[in-house]
Amino acid sequence: MMVEDRLSIMPDELIHKILFCYDMKFAVQTCLLSSRWKLVWTLMPCLDFSSRQFCTLHKFAEFVTHVLSRRNHQIEVSFVKLDFYGAADQDFVREIANYALSHNVQQLTVSSSFSNSRQVYPSCLFRSQSLKHFTLTCNYMRLFTTKTEAPLDFPSLTTLNLSYIILSGDVFSKCVNLKNLTLEWFTIKDVEVFDIITPRLSNLMLIHGRRSIAINVNAPQLQNLTISNCYFSSLNVPPGLSSLCYTFQMSPCSFVRFSNDQFHSLNKVTICLSDCYPTMPWNEEGARKIINTLQQLHSARYVTLNADIVEYISLFPDLFSQYPSPFSNLICLTMDCRKKKDAVIVTKSSEARNFFLENSPSATFTMLLAKVHSRR
Figure 1 (cartoon, rainbow, N blue to C red):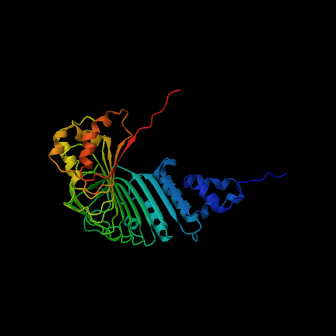
Figure 2: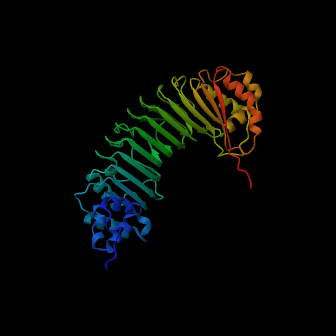
Figure 3: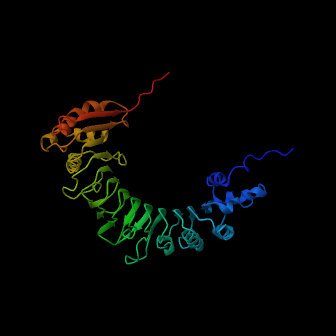
């Protein structure tokens, strides 16, 4: 009697989802299982290429050519992932990019590790009519060799994530439908003012920006802004911002200077003091900077402050009489103490709490405490 092969009787769509949990090398190797599996990998709409399973880039490049030449070309490509170690201008990078973009790829993720920051990706990687989601992770490499080169040209793109990258000049203006932009571990060079021009952008995340420059965000539909441990001399954002999440370090250049009176309709604000520099001494100047930053957010209705901020300014209670209460429109103030192991901050917070609520006496106050696990 023949033993039933339950895996092989599954529909191709389900098999493709299972195979996409692994890279293309594994997917191709499944052709040895049976005649039913011989051509399954050639119909996959999602391709995951990784050089980690190959001893040399030359063998990896040969494998890429083998897969792309034998794949069913009538099947469009919905998602492509490329992870490799080596120069960005490798022929296989251009080969994969051209194939994916010519097959109307919707989502593209490229991650590379190499040491020469002067190398650049082929220009074909940055132009597509169909691409909607693009993620690029480099080792601090420029997207373009000169400031005058064309920016990213993705008219259909809605989500863009760039990590470990060097930017300069105009980059995003041709991404006219971009809604979600994340820049992480990035550096700006060759310009004193960096423009983010995106007419439909609604969500912007700036994480670990490494150079103190001015950033001008020209995005009239921006709703949500996240800034984490960035070094900007100033930041100009549109006045219609609804949500702000700001994490900073107590270091000499850690505070972002917002343009005056640009937050008119803030609904939700979360401010956190990062613990990246636990040995940095707390002083009165730092407390003044924190209060000045909070006063720029005076229109916020729902405010969350982490315990370190409250503890910091509570060390200098004389400042409460020198500054007006920063918030005038509060509905709810939340103090997040979940990372504190003791309740000392609770006893120190009363003066700071009264200071924050002075101009909003009807606002509610909430304190989030760490969970206590009982011992058996």
